[in-house]
Image (cartoon, rainbow, N blue to C red; front, top):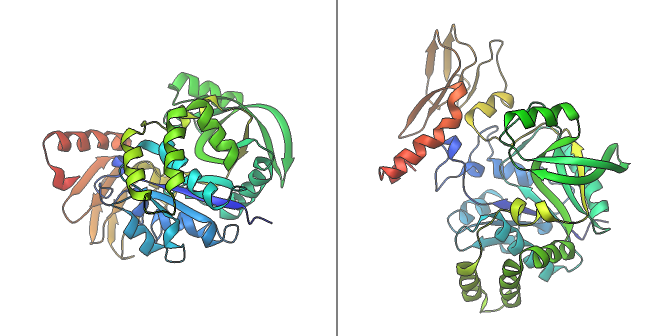
Length: 362
């Protein structure tokens, strides 16, 4: 029934707010931040049994492809689509869509993330199935996260009139995208109960998707068609590199979603986190009775005394006495100690190290 349903996972780099573990050669999706598996491995595994391995495609960078292939050996090696260098996720999405269309012109494609946490995986697969049925009819389906607080770091999707329901999920017209509002607007959005957070996950028929690229981003579309014509031939590598040098660098939200036609949003509660900072791990890792949590190879890597609301990420014995609201992260070459409320400022440290030429720590 779903032989024409494909998952396209975007697995490029990034994640400086999770420095010093997230680096240019080991971005967030490669890290075992929540379980013993990497976020990427978990993102692939939770797709079963809805998607067979041959229907899972991954777009990633040259520096990451070997690691990702090794971690998911059941996914065919040819399903890893390698970008020559980063051009943001609009180009990556278009390249993945064109590759899948060449394989199956009747494909419906779910654009998914490689580095998010989803606690309720069964519910997530149910939503994806509902989205598939809607997308087959030509609509673009976006998965909205039911907001729990007035976040200013996420985009928002406004829900219009209700269009229907399936498997217990109502779906609505998506009437507007708002990118990262200030705290006043975010508070208004939350109170109105008409908005969802933008999860960055979209489901669409491949023809619908590429038609939107042709309408809104004709240069990206033209370059992608040049690449697509060379798929499966000896000209593919040179064609990809030549087109990629000319490729506009844009996000999928700005390039396509804000101006897309026939948009549908499915609000959902799937225990979602973008794992965007060390502070976000407090929401997904088990806590003791005092709000403390830890991640490390040994379950005995912590001794605590009078400690509250503190995260420790370390493989060695770590002792905390009389502290609270701290994030402590240890790698082989860096020790980070940060107030829980200042984890967003870690990006400033990464920028500083880059300006100072300390590339060994990036």
